Image 1 (cartoon, rainbow, N blue to C red):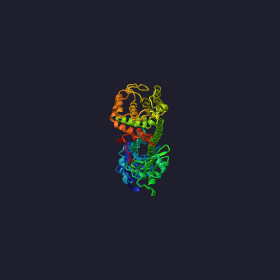
Image 2 (image 1 turned 90 degrees about the vertical axis):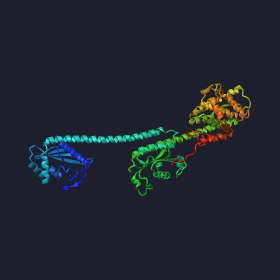
Image 3 (image 1 turned 180 degrees about the vertical axis):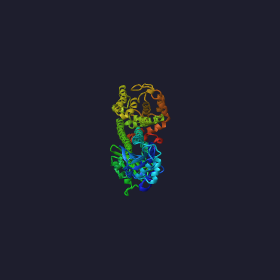
Image 4 (image 1 turned 180 degrees about the horizontal axis):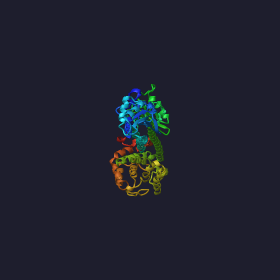
Length: 579
């Protein structure tokens, strides 16, 4: 509550039309059966309703005359001849107190002339004393002890009401805080659920910006992501890798956003930068369109992957620690995700190097089969695509094709290069390459998906193959696909013991072997795309083909098959960074 001065009267007396004062006067009137004066404890200015009471004398004079009958904390009752005077301490707010003063007849025997004379002695003017005496004489009497009890009850009730109002305000504040915290937790939970390597930066950025828009009262949210290598190596804008995402009305483009982050040294700070009017209103501030700002580094480990910012408060208020901590938390999540993607790509490149080394070892073992693994992988992918295989399964088939003969590292070169027919013992020896390949790869966790195809690509549809004698759909689908791809490239290539088979002979062998050696459905698909597969086999069979299909900058990110394996219509097009 506050004492609001509405007008000045004689002797500095004022009254107020403030709603809180009106409510307090109404409560006092209800409790004691008549109107009372309210005096500000500091200024002693009076507040009253002129429709009910005449102007009073100063508070000091009112309390200076008479005998004090009772005095307890917050309340006193004075006897003034035929009148009882109540002095009651009441609150008007956090820093303001008031004194409520009420005059009441002390008994039913009070006479009009006696009351009027007492009021004149208290300092009331004659008209005021007459008006107040006529009003008091009509009120029920208040003995001093009864007035004290009523005053104490009023104070207790007022204290209880104040406490209830305080608790209600606390409840509302706590509810608002819990609601805000829930929104923050829900946002962080949604982001955490989407922290997958396959989740693109753009998808996660949009999710973060939309969620933060609901949690932070900012006119704009902006997120700049880039390659940490390019950021560290140059002082200028990393235009080769930068992606700029915006939600709302952002006053900065990506270049000025980056310059601002550089100027504030956001990347070097452990905590987010918070700027409000005390900084942005200075003449040296170079971004007048930015009035309030929170900016945090998107950091994963020691690497900086970008900057995340909330710009300009929606109500032009100041940003505080609550908004800054939330934005920093989300920036940390984004940085962790970017760091995981970087680590995954580094591991993927390492895996690509291992696979290149293994396939090169196979090619070095037998120059006649140089490039065979790469061609089998590419043929297998086309067969799988035609069968409806997609995504990660297609990637697994490609790797299985590259590595299907890795076990031949453990096969005698003399047997591999023997120009004549193999003896039964030699054939049994060469059959072991599938088990050897399985054992070579079994401890590489990232290649666990290719193991069934490496082990079973020599199984036959009718169960007569090796090593397990599986039949029909017991044979893993990747193994059935690679079996056809392997046989086709072998028959269409020169070997130490024979020249390439004619196309008619190859086709006849496949037709005869469908349903016996090979899955008839895969053979059917083979004939459907026969010309495409022939083109793959006729390409350069040198080791360079295998290298180009698996470039140094690995393109099998997020489970995608290298672009060189896909048909021209399926090669994804490069996209420019969103702005």
